Length: 181
Image 1 (cartoon, rainbow, N blue to C red):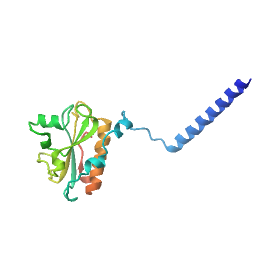
Image 2: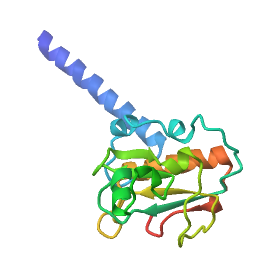
Image 3: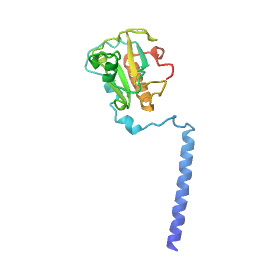
Image 4: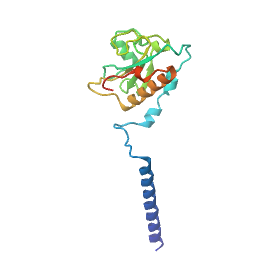
């Protein structure tokens, strides 16, 4: 008898909890999570973007006025592999300021800083949409025709762009993403 009344009490408490939980979720809105898998714990193991952007190097905040994001055109890689593919002797000479890795060559979402950023040098200009020496160049490791950037790459790149635009007062119209972003 005692066991049966306990079961009824547990069932009633469970039903009330479900109703309250449903009401809370309903009031929070009807916003589904973004498509694709994303591991928040994996994201937080990476170095903070603010730490990557800042350094002890003295520089003027008005040096940079645009951000250019491009794809590497490779399925895997990191700074060393990009340097090797470009025929460069040192990874410090890669023609980007930042490289965002995809898990194949370095951790997914890992942002690697190049020698051009640490020295505050502009990249050697090619045919880019911003076509300015004052643009910060970010390379996202992916071959967008075969595989899109990972969810962590997208989030980390967006966080990096946000931190850079905030630090250097870069306007949104001066931020150029690839067409398939």
